[in-house]
Amino acid sequence: METKQIAAIVLVLLAAGIAYYFLATAPAQDGPAVDEPQTGGAVPPFAKEGENATMQEFAANLLAAETVYIVEDVRGLEKYPLSRTHVMQCGVDYAGSQGLAGKELVVYAFDDDDVCGTVNGTASIDKCYSDVLSASEDPATMIIWIEKGSSPEIYSRGMVVRINETYVQGSCTTSLVSPSENEEEEPLLPDVNISEMEGPGPVIINETENGNADEEEEEPGDSHTFP
Image (cartoon, rainbow, N blue to C red; front, side):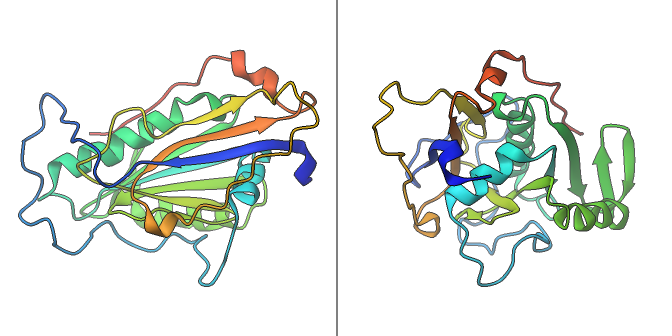
């Protein structure tokens, strides 16, 4: 997709000092130590070492994608029940967001004991991860990989979203926004160093009138979560 087809791309990231959001059934303490090493599992297959993808590149690929994989990696989070809940809630929020309406969604939850939760039941993580590996090589597919931690990373074929106890419900979202009425206005293409910020926020993709902006009025598809 050409650059001119994207009028503006904004990736908003939540600051590290955001107030805690607690679910009614979640415990007040998340894990034994705030400085314990991050958990969550394997490196996402699209995360190419040394790749320096821009937000424009990621957003254009996400806009053009026919299929989006959402991987909720909650392995090793039994001591972090709040972060575990938030990782899964983030997946639900993305799946139901406006920007993914009309796309085929594949949602996997990687859990302990080699269990992969799917909308059709459970499978082995090896089976699900094999699907994710294949998807990472498909130019018509994007991957959103969610795990515990901070410092999200963006790549041309996917995004690593890291969630902890500070997550605010609804922050994991994508939206399509109409372009500015001022045709002479320069496109807004901010270059954000996401490695210095914590937690994802809305990914807002602005398009030209010939793009897919009319999808704004579609109802988001069904979202899924797993026990």
